Image (cartoon, rainbow, N blue to C red):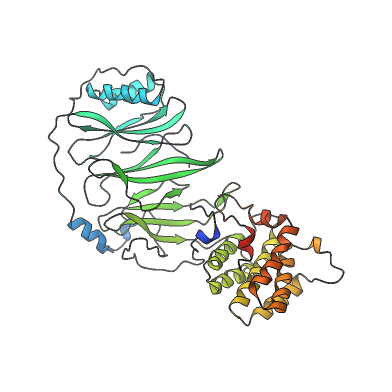
Length: 436
C-alpha cells in the first residue's frame, strides 16, 4: 500500500572528472544481462504498456527466484487488535511521539482508529498510517506511519511486531514538513520478505529540492538499502516488471526539462534491476539533448575522460546542429565560441587534420583584427587564439595552457558564464578549461 501523503520533489554533476558521458543519440539494445555496476543505453517502450513486451528473462533474476529462501514463521503472538484504544495527546517531541504510538499499538490499537486520532488529536491530514506487507518475513504485517512531527519535521516510522510486542525498526526523515512517500511495498526481487521503496525530500537550498529513494529490505536485524548507489530524482520512482520476468525493476522517469534552479535536464528513463545481490542502474535511456549547453557538457565529460574523439564530435555538433536551442537568450556567442575553443584543443590533441578548418572558422567567425577591441570579444575567442599561438611557438601543452589560463584571471566572467547553468550542471574551475 502507499501512504496518501503527496510529496513534491536527476543526477547532479559536481565535477567534470566525476561525470560519466551520456549518449547523445539513443541506440536500440535488448534488456541487458546484469553485471554489478554496468550501465547501458537502450531504447525502451513507453512505461505503462508493459503487457506488450516479450519475456526477456534476466539470468540473475532466474537465479534469485530459484534460490529464494523460505520465510521462517514468527510464532510470537502480537497484541490482539481491538477498537476503542485511545491515542494520547499531540506529543512535544519526536521521541515522545514514538512512545505514544508504541503504547497505542501494544494496547491493540488499529490503524483505522489511529488515523482518526491522528487527524483529530495530532492535527494530521489524510490517513497518515497504513498496514504494510510482511517486511520481517515472520507472517506479521508492519505498520507505516508518515506524518508531520513536532518541529514541523516530515517523518516516516516503521513499526513491526517482534517477540510479541510492537517496536520501532526504522525511521526516515525529510527536509521540510512533507513526510517521506512510500512508492511501493511488497516483494520486488522474488526473495521474501517484502521490500519497502521510500522517497524522502532532500534540498540543496530552500527552493531546490528532489527525491532521494531507497529500497529497504530486512536483513534479519535491520532494514538495509538494496540500491548500490544513491538515487535522487525529481520524479517519484515506480516499481514495475519491465522485462516480464517476475522480478520488479525500479523505473525512474525523467520528464523534467529543467528550470532556473536545476538548469537544463535530459529527459528519458533510468531503470534499476536486481542482479541477485543489489539493485543497480541497468538501463539509461536519454532523449537527445535539446540545448547547446547540454551537448557542450557531454563533450566536456568525454574530454575529462581523455576521450578526445567523442569530445570533438560533441563540440562539432554544438557548432553545426541548428536544431539545438539556447538556454539563455544571451548565451549563443559565448557557447559557440567555447565549443570552438574546445574543438581546437581536441583536434590538436588527436592530430586531427580538421584542426586547420577549425582555426579558419575561428578567424572567419571571430576575426581578431588590429582594430578589434579584445574586451568586446567573448573570452573563449581570446583563449582559442592564445592557446593556438602559444602551442605553435612552444609545442608544449603545459606552456600553452599556462599562457591561456592567464585570460581566466584577466576576464573574471569566464567561470561565471560556464557555472550559471544550475545545480544539476557541471561546476568548472580554471584548470578544467585547459588541464595540461
